[in-house]
Image 1 (cartoon, rainbow, N blue to C red):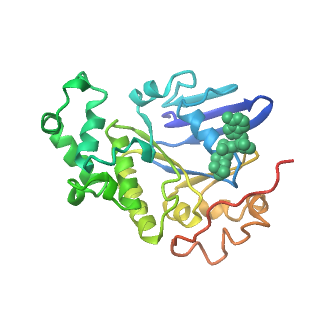
Image 2 (image 1 turned 180 degrees about the horizontal axis):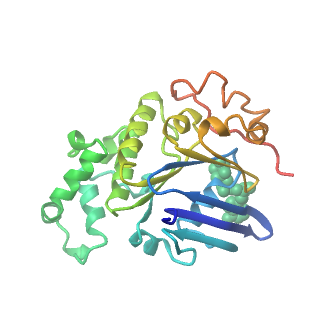
Length: 274
Ligand SMILES: Nc1ncnc2c1ncn2[C@@H]1O[C@H](COP(=O)(O)OP(=O)(O)OP(=O)(O)O)[C@@H](O)[C@H]1O
């Protein structure tokens, strides 16, 4: 039997006595889209930081394709096939979409940055850039300045930047955050496209997006896993309903998640941690 693409095994993270991640064990199967959800402060970001090497666990293990990686820095994890979606700050606003991808592709190579010229780099990585543009649906906008992209298009570029690292496992941190319905639709189809042949783990507050994309879901509360499984199973789980009750009682509406909208659920404050 092949090892899961990504595993957390009895993962703990304490911040000076405060336990943000408490005995988290989860398997992400190769090829699946796995969503991590939970009320605000549940420990989703901390878990993502642990999985991607940005934080070292207090105890427990992270395994990538069966190999222990929790003591490795993020850049080594990238070389092993795990990449986390870039934040907006890593997009150069005054460069075109195409130039942004060229710079990202050039970064891990031997090419010295001081000799970088747009034309030379663009020529060297032409085919790969075209392929990524196609994948993230930005071919028509390749000569547009990143600053002039819509929110959804910019998210596409950020994910495109991650793809320059050839990830087998892609971690997406709230890919639809701050978006209206059009941007959300765009990101849903984008995630579907980039998930082909890859494993995707995402933190996402919008339940409609989770319902449409995720093969399986892990629900966190107070740093612990309270449920995991497919959407239909998780939405009926009493512990999950209780975790969201009082704030977003309709987060798992009985008539289904409906169409995504900008006003879709965006994470409840959650109950106060005991
Ligand atoms: N560096 C830190 N030092 C101390 N406490 C921290 C640190 N990072 C996170 N925490 C605490 O750990 C808990 C989990 O935080 P985390 O950001 O992982 O939750 P989250 O589920 O991502 O929340 P949100 O949905 O609001 O983004 C919170 O109570 C937070 O205050």
